[in-house]
Image 1 (cartoon, rainbow, N blue to C red):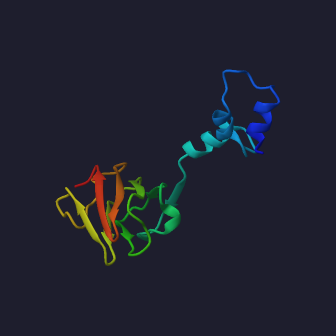
Image 2 (cartoon, rainbow, N blue to C red; image 1 turned 60 degrees about the vertical axis):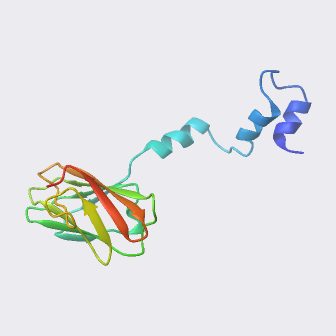
Image 3 (tube, rainbow, N blue to C red; image 1 turned 30 degrees about the vertical axis):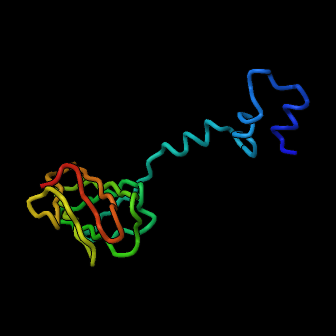
Length: 141
C-alpha cells in the first residue's frame, strides 16, 4: 500500500483531500516550494573569449559573451534536441555572431544563416526545431 493510501485509510487526512491528490506528493523528500524555486533559477555561462562552441550543458542557460573584439558563438551538430533552447547575450562591445557547424540556422537577421546580435546588451534565443535545425529569434541584425 502506498503512503498516500495509508494516510487516507488512517483517517488523518482532511476529507477534502483525495487519495489521488495525496499520490501527487508521494515520494517528496524536501519542501516542494524549494524544488519549484530551483527550477525557476536561470543559470549563466559567462564567456570572455572571441570564440565559443555551445555544449549540452548550455541548454536553458544564458550564455553571455564579453569581449572588445567580435565574438562567434558556434552551434555544434548532434548536441541539442528539438524543443531545447539556449539564450545568448552580448555584454561586451564586440558584436556576437551565431554560426553553425554542420547545422541549419534560420533567422530574420540580414545574414539569416549567421545572425549577429544587434548591439551591446542585445540578446537572442537559439531554438532547436528539429535535428540539426535551429531558429534564432531576438534582437538580431
